Amino acid sequence: MTRLETERLVLRPLTGADFDDYAAMMDDPEVAEGLAEGVGRTRDDVWRNLAMFIGHREIRGFSHWALVEKATGAFVGRAGPWSPLGFPGLGVGWCLARAHWGKGYASEAARAALDYCFTDLDAEEVVSLILPGNGRSVAVAERIGHRHLRDTDYRGRRVHVYGQRRPE
Image (tube, rainbow, N blue to C red; front, side, top):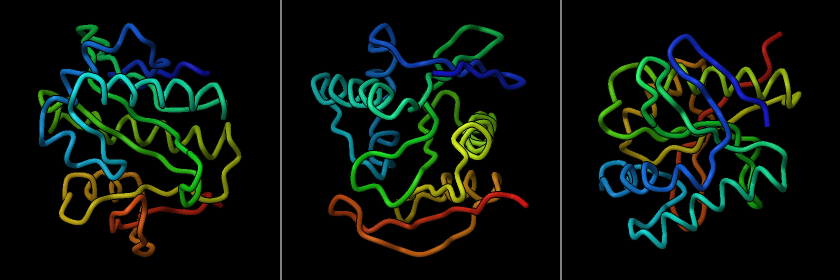
């Protein structure tokens, strides 16, 4: 899987070595409860979730990257392309540790992932699923050019589908 760099972030494949940082991020209820995928907060749940992203990369050839702050080497979160069985299209998602909220990292990583989807994966449309009430993710989606397309049910939850078509 391709490694990317943005102005302030390195986007590299998630690995098992990210588990402790990933578990710490997911232990925050505001982080975990904001995800459309619905992830439990126990170490076992987080292990399975991390393994799911790594497995997705093996099956599809792409997945979320670990986001690492260039200036410090700190684990910031994850973001990237996503298309598991039953997902309503090729998606871009993001999840950041709360210590890194408000720095613009989610938009920076999501924009890089969106560009990757259109350029490297030759996508015609890219979507993001957002839980109702998650204004922070709506703001990120709109900053990268997404607009609200529709609402749908996904894995037992009502979600907003934001997205956009390939630029002309």
